[in-house]
Image (cartoon, rainbow, N blue to C red; front, side):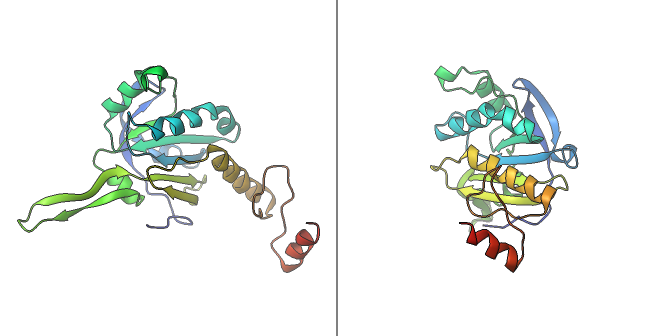
Length: 210
């Protein structure tokens, strides 16, 4: 699995559904670079089981992401038409109606490959035909991108393992605290807790208070 942390986030242009019901043909990640922090997350497929719990959980925390100037963007290898249909389906029928942040369609699988979260790969068989080996879906990858377009945090879960949206918010808080104060955030740090100066003296002082 590739490590993108510390590197520029791969840019993309792709179809998407925005605002819960509007289909666009050319959604561009670069439109948000320099303007907002970005939480870009991949999920395996529409109309599945773990995926709606994550997608709805992000929506439930949207006020918290907005307060932190974060744009949430979801991506799967489904089409924009599948996204749109799922977004129109009521929750009690297995849908995600009410989700407003963008859902990007990666039918070509190029975005998933660029972020190295695709659960399979293209190859040639003995007859010279292009085939796909593995599962043509994305793992549960998540990438926190700063306003310079650099990936500052990434995590990739296998398909059965849902993510923690609270942990995502914690990582946003840690990044923004470091950017503002220059102090680093120790294990299990949360907003309002003491951070530490990145020196030998700073860590010694911090540990002495534990």
